[in-house]
Amino acid sequence: MDVFEGWKVTSPYGYRSDPFTGSQVFHTGIDLVKYHLYPIPAFVGGVVLFSGEGIAGTGFGGYGNVVALRDEKGYVHCYCHLDSVVVQKGQKLSTGDIVGFQGTTGRSTGSHLHYEVRSKGTPSYGYGSHVDPGEYLELYYENFEEDEDSMAIKADDWMWKQIYNILGAAYNQGKIEWQWCQKVLDRTLTAGEYTHVLAVVNARAQGIDVDVENPAAISPEKRG
Image (tube, rainbow, N blue to C red; front, top):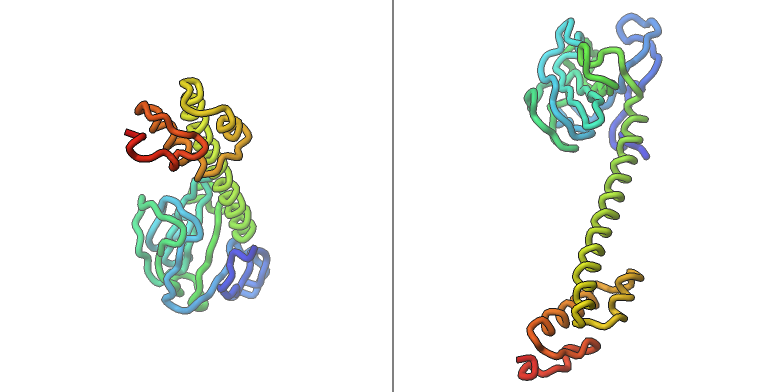
């Protein structure tokens, strides 16, 4: 998975030559480029912890205009060197919401986004607790997809539980035949069949003797 597809990576996470001094230093984030004033989207959703100029002592000294947000796992995502910011502290963002515009504020040699992920939010917004942002996003997106799958399974289980309850009660009251209950237990009852059986249940609840195999064959007058 290429989490930064479409971006130009001008400086990866890890050791590099400092663009100002030439000495070997550890680059705590990844530098990404689209174009100057490009609207920067949030790579994940979260709550904005910091929005404004990163002055010394804040954990963002030299980072220029910064937006930092905390995701649901407690990690802090830092969008740095922005030309300007468009969000406020305390604001809740979704993935893809715009945080600001690509710029070159602070200690910067050109317009780009310095994107940094920190494993904690205190002190100084987790300064020094950086992790590889690409690896983090890959795991984050994979877990998000697994959560979606889990939610789909839970939703499916909930639907079948409702079907069991409705058709089980109908069978106990003699409103449907066992073959339909067996289909429910085997989870082979289709959506169309479920609608069909509900029609039978509703008709018989009104005292109408409907053929469970083909309720449409009963004339309207016989249905009352």
